[in-house]
Image (cartoon, rainbow, N blue to C red; front, top):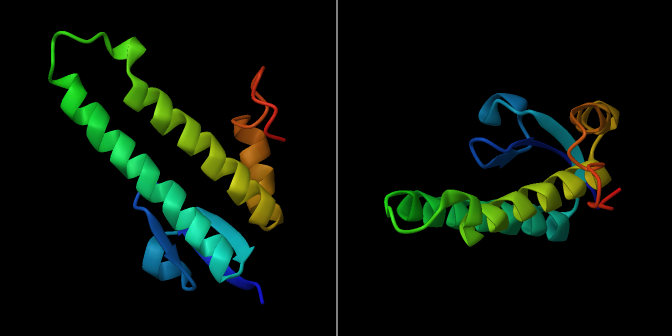
Length: 108
């Protein structure tokens, strides 16, 4: 059964209480879908850590970083999942920022 959750991407928080996460997005999800969200957030965190380490190496150009590409792909996937599960306000916000309908994405 789907329940209402609040998600804060920046802090990596998912909660059923808005005050607990300083939520940005409201969604309706079951336990399996919450697991997928947590997995995407963990993947983003791992890629972010990898890009931090890579940023301190002068031998690799940042625009060719596989870690940055992995982070971006996970972020787009996360937004696609938030859009799918989101309440009307969440869907409207995601549509307004245009992250899912950039040329070539085909996520929505």
